[in-house]
Amino acid sequence: MTITATAPATTTATTTAISAREQEDMIRAHMPLVGHIVRDMLSRVPGHVHRDDLTSAGLAALVTAARAFDPERGIPFGRFAAVRVRGALLDELRQLDWASRTVRSRARKADAAREELTRTLGRTPTQEELAALLGVGVADLNTVDDDVQRAAVLSLQGFAAADDMVTETSAGPEEMLLFRERIGYLHDAIQALPERLNRVVTATFLEERPLSEVADELGVSESRVSQLRTEALGLLREGMNTHLNPELVADRTDGCVARRRAAYAAQVAARGSLHTRLAVTNIHGVKVAAAA
Image (cartoon, rainbow, N blue to C red; front, side, top):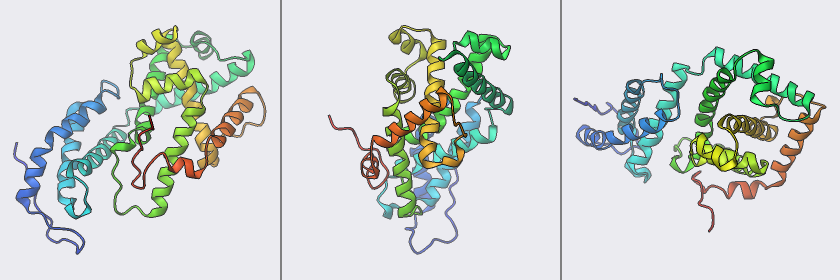
């Protein structure tokens, strides 16, 4: 495979020039990094996403990163390139639009039906009850849930893998503070979840453990773990939006679901302040390891 990394015709005054040979050496040395990130991403998306599509996008991003790299920033090229490659793979997945409109539509219907049953029954419905209301099989419902959860992994990954992030020099102080505050809110929102939902989110997303293992630990079925995970993600989304994007929160003025979600949002707010939320990350937006 021949890689050509032609240096830009001009460089800005703030960029240290790197020769085309140096760029090509960096690209060749870091091609295994692309393979590693692609393998990690493939484990989180449906099987019909092709490795070749992601690899091509990752290699193109690696070449672009080599051309844009400035050693004077003090950031190792591997970390700089990793951010560019991950971003390119996420863009590629968005273009593939694997979470089809049909899946998203069915997921919205399932969410609405779940809330309706919760109000009617006064408890969280079982997968069988939800499937019966929607007129589908439990297996079909679980398939939709699984695709939607994988989409959520990509969304949460932007927060949970904060220690892999490198701040672009174009990001100003305000953008960095907002980014760090959002990380802090996610941390508080996860901690404020009811114990069982907290365990499910931590195990399946942050620890990346299989559903079967989590189900055995909790003494429930895999479909029940999937259901708990869906419930937890709904709370996380609404709890964070209440404080960060209130315009995205549906207007629910009554009912047990509305009261429970309002109470949860209040718990998220009460868990910390701007100071404690910023303390979750350092000034570069990198997640700070928890004290032993």
